[in-house]
Image (cartoon, rainbow, N blue to C red; front, side, top):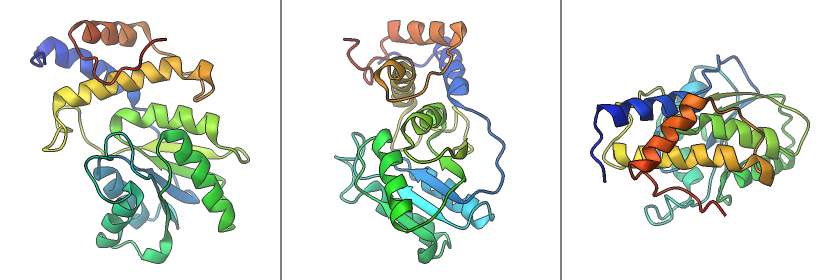
Length: 221
């Protein structure tokens, strides 16, 4: 794969920044951490719970396309274990571990809250840094209940510092582009609400595609 030269990093940073919503957080009825390969999402959810942002922490996620071959337990279970190790009381955690995509994360979480008779009017969503916007757009389209005020956040990590032993910077760029493509093509399919994509961001996307960062793109047809 193409070496990440300074121009590739500059273009990637534009897309990284676009994916961030920069919501200011305030107290909510629950924190919903969406499952993934990145356990730092669990840590961010636990950190917010321990800081008193909400009385309930919900983890959602079965095994998705990135974790199916990596882990032998559902994402939500693994995340919950991390939160308990950080000091979150087990009885303040709910687990939804059947979902396999973002839409199911939202729909099955709603069912879980309904089943436990937990009313929610304000919610904090926790997702990976480059999936904040897509999480928001998905929630706004897929949440089946009464309207909920949502704030979206993610692990407080820069693009430069995000890669680790599990995910390389090249892989991060590939996944970010796949998520940006989905932000564009999913609204007409009914999966997400529309999000404006600035011309500079889409230009960066096209330039990175031309450089070969295509491994997480969906077929256009």
